[in-house]
Image (cartoon, rainbow, N blue to C red; front, side, top):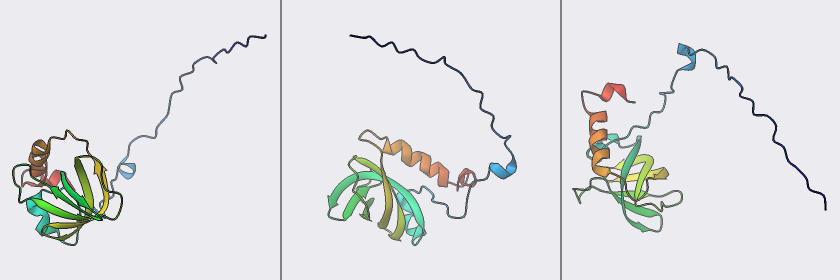
Length: 137
């Protein structure tokens, strides 16, 4: 029997040349922003696309309920699913707000089963507060 030897080609590190950063290639599209909002602001965004995070409480057919504030059982939002239901306990829903407690999902992202919703709520509160809101879309 013949034994074949494999020899790796020498490792070559290529220097990648990137164009210099200029104002024209640093722009972010702001034509259709999708802000992360707290549950308390949902009613102010009817008809707009937003991101909302919560604990999945119930999934039934094409409807899901999420609780957006771990300390407030009244923070339930009905999500009308248009895609696949999440499998994680925590999820971020991007969708169009249909009412003070309803959103039509355009997409959802699983955040695992050990997400710190209290910390997230605090951060989103700062993002939407008077002091820092100008830093975010």
